Image 1 (spheres, rainbow, N blue to C red):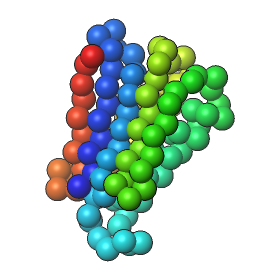
Image 2 (image 1 turned 120 degrees about the vertical axis):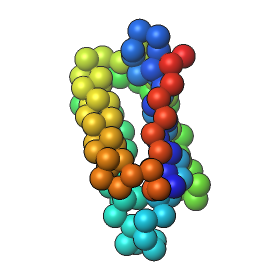
Image 3 (image 1 turned 90 degrees about the vertical axis):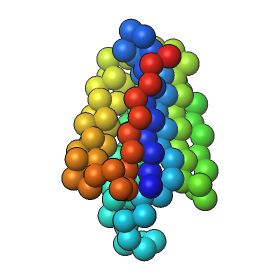
Length: 109
């Protein structure tokens, strides 16, 4: 199962997004759920790097299936739009494939 954790501040600003684990929908190379999650996550990272000036730390561990973006400053309006798009995409995958393969956690800090 993949767990997506989205952490926002008390004033609703993104602080951290983490994707962890493998969905387990199908065998390696054929897992469409894991592929969709990976594409959304990696595209969001690349878009933030190329299309905004926002700074964030990035941690990855391919074996454990971890991608974590941590923002040290409040994100810009452009970054917020990209992150909301990520959230929309992940939620759509969850609605399509259910809680057997994907878990989404929302936290406030």
